[in-house]
Length: 130
Image 1 (spheres, rainbow, N blue to C red):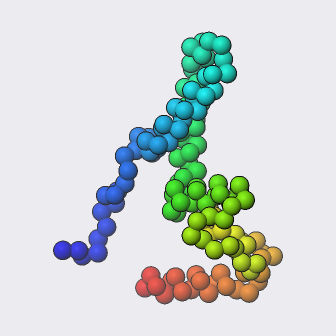
Image 2: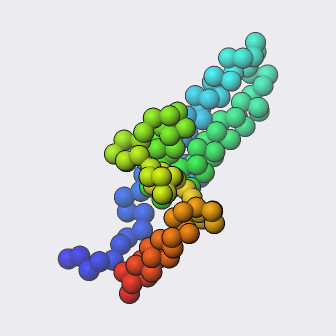
Image 3: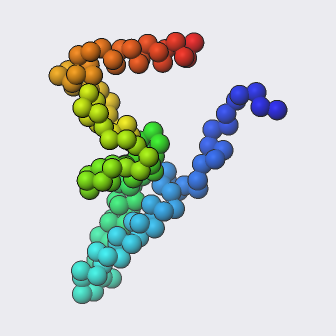
């Protein structure tokens, strides 16, 4: 029976040090690519290990900034390349940011804030939580 309780981490992917397997593989590939720049990569192994771990942790940190994790990173990359993210309509002139952007607070000069729409949304969320 489902009583509404959620078991945390039930559907989580495998992680090591908070990084998923794909992030570890991307870090390893980055270390291999950087290693090709050196004539004898074995001499620079501490540097290559730092590149590997640094890239892995950077990718995990970027992924965790978004509430929908991988989708948010995908949308950020696509928006920075000039493509519209899949399944998200173009941003409106009223609120010109993507819905997946890790935005904490809008500027005071934004029309969205001047119209008080942020307060309307926060009040509706409070009433939903009750």
